[in-house]
Length: 205
Image 1: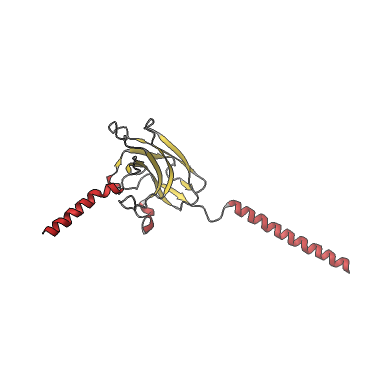
Image 2: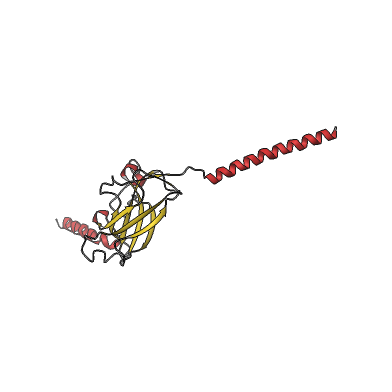
């Protein structure tokens, strides 16, 4: 009995110490930020080409001082569930250290407490972002660099107001143009070589 009590006490103590070691659970975060993104419904964003504007601010219905601990924010592009299915490397986990929902950082900056209602950033969709369905999430961090709150462009089930991204092909247009020019130059050079050789042959006769 004593051994079991000691084991239970150890487990309780371990759980109580988790926050001290920076373990943050997404389920513990408050949704205090209102986040919107510029793409129109149905618009498909091209990687390396299209831009989006993300705007966020503190929910004005919350009590004063709600954001007193906010020091920095990170804006991220996140996979929607439809693009996470059967892809373990994109899996959502409650432990923020293990969560793989939001791998693409849009921007990180200090939280502007003087402008709580509307902060924004314009971002070009990066070329390495794969074709998938996404949403945007903004995390607020405290002085210890732990997540304390968030906001996102979609609902709690992550099924509404989603973004579609279409990745670029493996080849760039500039490379295609250069390839065509090089091929044309090679053909002309070869034709010129045969023409010169033919003239030399006639002269030797």
